[in-house]
Image 1 (cartoon, rainbow, N blue to C red):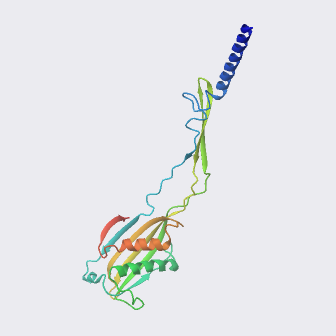
Image 2: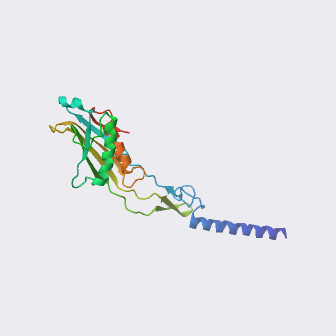
Length: 237
């Protein structure tokens, strides 16, 4: 009687071992993959967030300024001054936007000692502005947020499979745009250029962090920092 039970138990164990071997031959050593096999639990099947690096140009201001050696330049930063902005074709901005930059320049001029209260009348000095924009990088196209790769490996126990998934839930980036503010202070009567400079900044189009007023204030402040000093191109902030 005991012999019959032992024989039946041995037969059952043999059947289980055969079934396990067949499963390994079809799916690989285990769900997690065996040694040297990718498997479903291997390194390929875990979703990964695709890294996105920020463009190094974003938010960076560059400034260049020049001052005249003419004796008339000694009057810079003194007395009344008026502000004008020029228009043009192509990359120049429209009149409505120019007023935002004019206001920022007026504030900057007051900060360096000028009188802007009588700007409606002809003044001995005039600050002439040009504001332009240029697309540095076009807007990104819409894309699938999920991408993946599949791998198959044949090992000792048969074939094993793996699936790698990259997930990018970020929105496509808008165009990267360079805004440039040129300023020139001229002696009205003679037409001599006493001081000039420009400042540029790169921002994403439509970025809530960079409305026009913020861009104008940033550029005007950088342009007239330490006025009327002149320097080579240098990054600011």
